[in-house]
Image 1: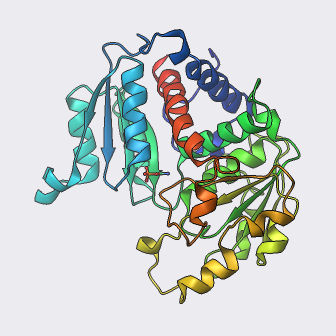
Image 2: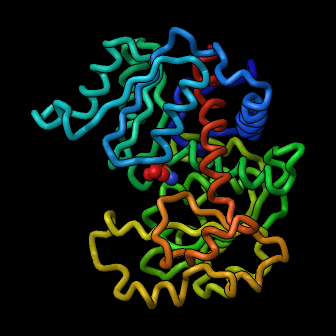
Image 3: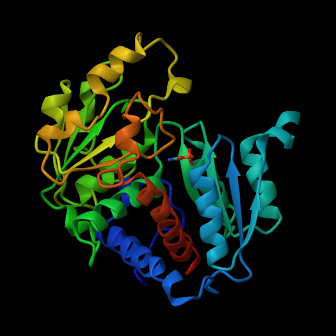
Length: 336
Ligand code: CP
């Protein structure tokens, strides 16, 4: 892992294939640890990890905290509702307060796209060693979710050796509210880097046509794409067409809290057109699997029966894999 170069993890756009391989390989090793009987590893002993979530979270925050504890770190969390944000303190000053208390890693979630990146830049400028890990910023990026989704798929296609290469030539369909989804954006970088072809499917109000060229230009702030050859992206409006020959389908939550206008007029109509059910999966490949990053609106983006059908649904596995992926990320950014 000595060629790991990222001091902070803000966006998967800057990840090389080697970066993806390093994270997945380490997560695979960490996943095997509980079966040896050693629950905790000493890797982060004496380090302080702070979860700084300005937006709600169940999975990301709890699994980062568990991951940090599994590596023997001390863990500190923050509750926005009872914090000095209410007295007018800015998110940046709040974060710097935790840095002053000695935090080695800040895991930051915020509704504004720029907060984790601004914080990382501020720390670099002042020579502070604290690392920033983006726990989800606005519509922009959710790198740990993109990586755990990649790992879950690699594990499904190639259980003995879950590498990014396991996705080469696979058809992955992402359905629903792509516009408001940082998960979809992180998945687009990760899946195309691994050589998968991605079909995006949803109504025009939630899936602008421009997503077809999402990975065509070099990633923001970079002259060249670190990935030589990416898989393709296409946009389709009809679910049956979008699901045809899919190896895996990812349903996304309708993020009504981020919709400034009434982009969906009839939720039942939406389910009829874009809801994933057993019946609708019949046009996919035979052993198709279904993912959802959670939280789920049962019966809207996915039927309740399908969500609970563990012969097809990988949702529980996604949650479990979140722990080993986040252990790998914490290990890698604190190793140097
Ligand atoms: N997938 C995801 O980010 O879930 P939480 O909002 O519960 O963290």
